[in-house]
Length: 127
Image 1 (tube, one colour):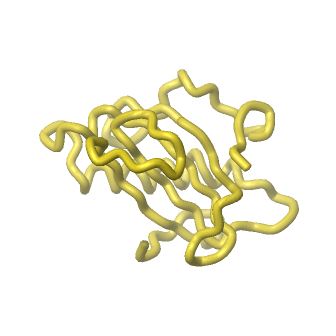
Image 2 (cartoon, rainbow, N blue to C red):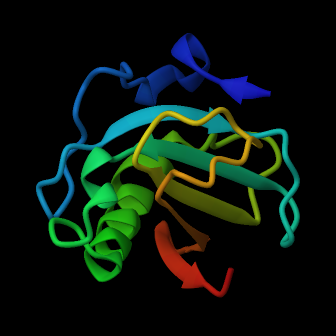
């Protein structure tokens, strides 16, 4: 199930609205995927488009990782339903372009990180 629109209830963010991150790069929410099981069990994936990651001189991997943690804490965690089964893992992904979930694109720059939720905050996990 891909969550979008009203399904995100309280935390709905239109896709065209930029999301604030520490680096200041332009990031936009692409989609939230909740029906693809992850290695740790129930997983919710928050997918974002971040065109600046295509140029490592603008946004390198370390900067992208800091932004991903911020996205996990400030965007993903508030959108986790507080009823029903809770996810074991949150995956945050950044791509330099809009890529359909599950499709490979060898020309795209992408970053993925996994987190667990501990005391309401994201904790990085080896992915």
